[in-house]
Length: 246
Picture 1 (spheres, rainbow, N blue to C red):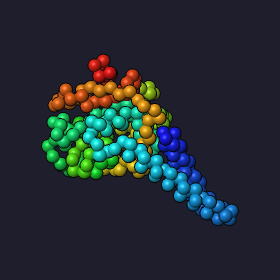
Picture 2: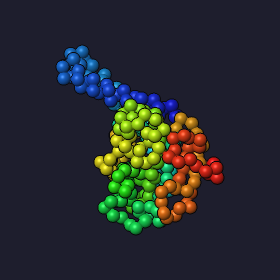
Picture 3: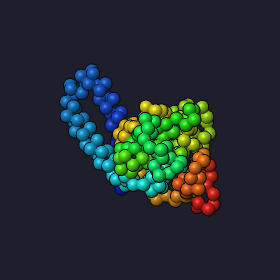
Picture 4: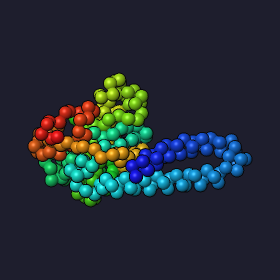
């Protein structure tokens, strides 16, 4: 089943380029002269039906209506791409409206409105007026919860990420929420955008992963809550986990 998701992702990429080629050919009437429009349309419809089916299966497996602490753990090992650039999630943090460290704790405001749903959307905010941070919203609409994507293991679009970050060391491209957003080109324009449609693409891990947990980083409240999750042994996390979390 995991290979099915990967094949669907490859097909989506190929179809995007086929669409561009097809458009260029149609501009020159080449497709219409060769009688290929019907074949292209059939391939186009079949391919995107496959993609939609695969994406629905991915989101059903992740279950964005579940509590943030559960989703944060399940997201470890999932690949997230934005316009084809990204990698495997290796570190997350969970937040909930009952949590004093959460943006939702004081209620809904214009700034945090996206975090109150609907689920499976992005919540993007600027941290300390400097760095963008990206969360995946979860729980039922109106609840107020999300998962901060803290670090990725870069896998796709490495040259683009290096150019955006201005560094060569692959371990420094996405090891931290601010670095991650800079590498993937995340800005406030993605705030409130659904995760099951372009420019986002999510792919499940090809095999089960081992997850560690521990206290969250850079907060002053609820500091002992073990809602930080990571891929065991990963060298791409923003900060190593203690032995107690393994």
